[in-house]
Length: 113
Image (cartoon, rainbow, N blue to C red; front, side):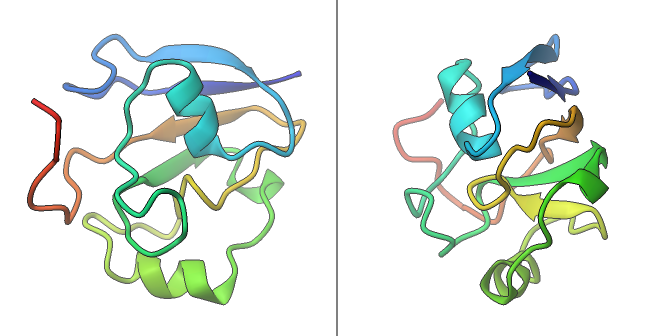
């Protein structure tokens, strides 16, 4: 089984995390299952950028982003060439190292801190 390593994030995952991840499930769903409360304001419908992640290792093992995801990513805070929307990126059988950006474009995090 593949493994997701999450680099430390001051609010969501201060010590970082590492856990097994089954293929065919989105990175966002894996994060949420492991109590890393990444924002997903559009309920994972590829209509916002609040679940934006940066894939530090393993990007080439993921399917390429579809045009709709690419269009949304253009609006993401801190966009990098290896950025993805975690709700759209499905795990494969390869390990990933990801970083959750410090900010999102969501001005209000409803129900959060």
